[in-house]
Image (cartoon, rainbow, N blue to C red; front, side):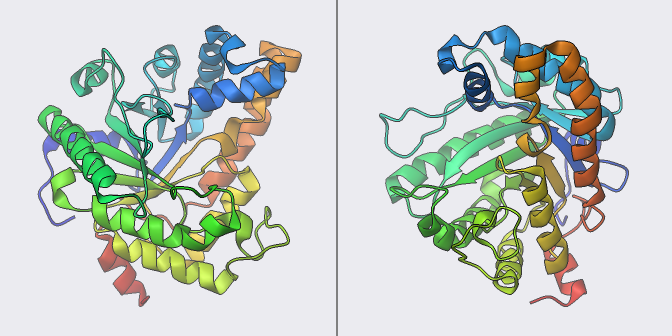
Length: 341
């Protein structure tokens, strides 16, 4: 990285990365999404899921799987006991945003957790702060200007506390279903433009957390591909490269709720494309099938599942990170040294 990094930010990034500087992190900061998984397994409405279930599940996942992760991402609402029970070698990211968004307000506008600040999250042990932002280059200028200002404020708060700022971009387009072929056709452009925008210095983002720039359900050869293919493998590789070249700060990939097999395919494409991603924050691809185990068979069965299947899932993801680059490298320099366009 070209700019001199503040000491606290550097310490925070070192805490959430492995010895190579690669971020091999586990994400279980889901709140409404986790509640929905439980609701489906329990055959009840989401509001009928006891909070204790969420807390217990996060604790079980954190206790066992942080042995294999450089860091864990949790939320301060249900995840603080899980954070305290993580492996000593595992760094901690804490989420700052409220879960979901108000559907009555246009633009999927973000909001921060009530009664929390960056400093309070740091006081709870956070090595880094994460903010999730729904972002689309197809949104109106008015909506995006509000989001830009919002991220600037959080970036300034993180800079004041001298703690790394991870910005998670969830790409979407107004009026399109994210799992549709129509959105799959424009997703590469939306992802790339988001990476360009939030690499700008005024946001003070240290690491971008992004989805891969293609919908893997529509890529030829993907384990989750259906009958309709939007991108060939070679086209997908080119789109990975274009998105990577758009970033002037480190970036990592999130699993976006796909299966373990599909996420591994996405990382395989990243390696083949030669993009300098700095690691992953993998969530449901590692642990989501354990929800039904807990509901159907109880805590002991969940512990057995996490130690066997969950551990195998995270080990497979980690094995795919050999091509990842340290967060402390210039993304463009790495691409150029590989001779990629």
